[in-house]
Image (cartoon, rainbow, N blue to C red; front, side):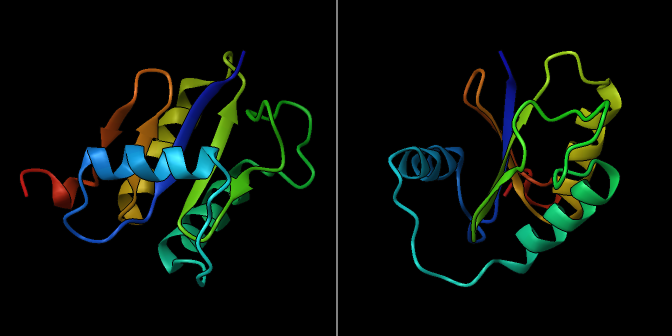
Length: 118
């Protein structure tokens, strides 16, 4: 069973409830027609530069490849035995790109550091 995380590019002021609603729309197959958010593009390029998903080579952290990338998010299904460094890299890159991180295991949402307390 995979360990699932996703990163989301939502407008400033978005809450955990907004992220969970966006996740639900995605699960229902409802994706709006829009250009890819530059934050999502930057994150995808950075994470796949370290951990390729096309093709996913030996030792890849991805349980499912290629990653599910949309205009406003990237979903990552990780092998449950992947190295802790992969998770640290995902957290760091999400913060660097101003993305909210959603943990599908418990529904937790982690805003970028700049948004904490706002």
